[in-house]
Amino acid sequence: MAGHKELADILNECLDRLAGGESLRGCLASYPKIAEELRPLLETAIAARKTIDIEPDPQFKARARYEIGAAVREAAAQKRRPFFSWQGRWAVAVASLLLVLLMTGGGVAVAASKSMPDSGLYPVKLAIEQVLLRLSPSAGTQAELLARMADSRVTEIVYLAQSGNTAQIETAVLRLDSYLTRIVSLAAAQTADNGALSATDQPPLEADASRKDSLSVWPLDGELAQLLEYYAANHPEAIRRALETAPADVKQVLLRALAISVTGYQDALDAIER
Amino acid sequence: MQDERDLVRSAQQHDGDAFAQLYDKYFDKIYRYVAFKVGNRAEAEDMAQQVFLSALQNISSFKWRNIPFSAWLFRIAHNKVVDHLRKKGRRVTVSLEGVQILSASNPQQAAELSLDIEWLKSATAELTAAQRDVITLRFAGDLPIAQVAQIMGKSQGAVKALQHSAIVALRKARLGGENGRP
Image 1 (cartoon, helix red, strand yellow):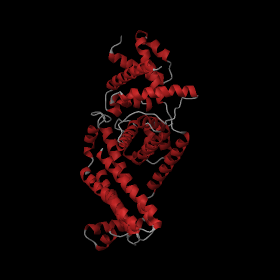
Image 2 (tube, each protein chain N blue to C red):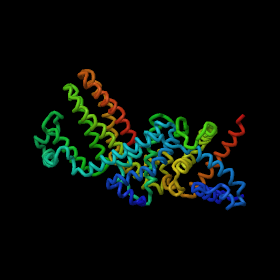
Image 3 (cartoon, rainbow over the protein chains, first blue to last red):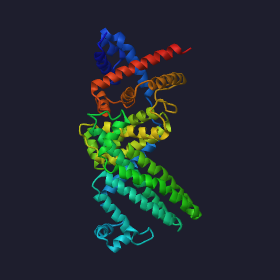
C-alpha cells in the first residue's frame, strides 16, 4: 500500500493525465503496485468529473457573448472619450474652477451644487461630481462619493416626480443604478485584490472571518456602511412618498427607481460588509 | 495566439478582442463552477455573466503579483456565489437541477447521469467546505492543482491531500448509494 502523501501525489498526477486524454489503463500501468488502490479512486473522479460536465445553454451563451461584447465596446468608447464628453470640455473646465470656488464658499458653485436637472447649472453640478470622483484618492473615498451622488440623484428623482418629466427621471434612475453598481464593483475589486494579495498567507475561500480581515485596507468602510444604511432606510421611503402623488405617466419609472433603491443599497451593503 | 499575460494587458487597454478571447477561454469553466455551487441554471447563467461584467469593470485593477488571471476570475465568481447564497439564506451546497448535462446523448444515458447527480449531490454535501472547494475548482473549474492552491491560499501538498480525502469520501458515498439501490 502506498503512503498517504505518495498516493495523493500519484492520484493528482493521474487526474492530470486523464484530463489530458490519457486512458485509465495507461495511468494504472504506470503504477502497477498500487493499481488496485488507485483504480476505484480514479473511477470515482472520472464519474464526478463527468457528472459536473455541464455547459450553458448555447442560446444564452451566444446572447451573453454579444452583451459582453457590447459592454467591452462601451468601456472602450468611454476610455476614448476625453472625459465627460457629453457635456463638453467647457463644463469640466468650469467645474474645476467652480470646485475651487465651492471649497472657498463661492456663490455660483454652491448654486450649481444644489441645481436640479431642469436648471442650466445642472451640467456643471454633474461635472463637479466627476472632477471630485477623479480626484478621489482611494476606492473607499470614491465609493463614499458615489453614495453621496446617489443621494443627489434620489433628491432629483423626487423633485422631478411632480413635474412629470419621464426622460429626466429615467436619466437620473440610470445614474443612480450605475453609482450603486460601481460601489459594488469597487468593493468586489477590493476583495479580489486583497484576496490575491493574501493568498499566500491565508485561505481566502475558507472562512468569512478571514475575508473580513482582508478587507481591513478598505478605507472608511464603517462610515460608508453608515451612509449606505441611512440611504437604504430613507431613499426607498422618499420615492414611495413621491409615487403617491406623482402623475400616472411617471409611476412606472418611479417604481423602477424604487426597486433599484431597495436592491442597490442592499447589494452595496453586502459587498462592503464582506 | 497571444499568451495570457499579453491578453490581459491588452484587455486592460480596452482591446475588445483580447477580452473576448479571455471570455471564450473561461466562460464555460466559470459557468460550470457557478452552476455547481448554486445548482440552478437561470441563476448560474446570470451570475456567470455578472462575473465577466465585474471582470471587465475591474480589469484595470488586476495585477499579476504571481497570481494568475484565472485565480482572480474565480475569486470574483466565488464572492458572487457567497453573496448570492447569503442573500437567499442558503449554505453553499450542490444541487444540479435544471442544469444542462453535456454528455447525456440519449434517455438511458440521461437516467444514469441523473443517478450520478443524486450521488454527487448527497456525497458533496458530506464533504468539508475545503474539500468541496477543491473538487469544484478542480473538476468544475478545470484548474490545475497549482492554481487551486493559489486561489485557496494553501500549499499544493495540502490541496492534493484534500483532493485525495475528498475523492475517498465520494467513493464511499458512491459505494453506499450503489449498495442501497434496488
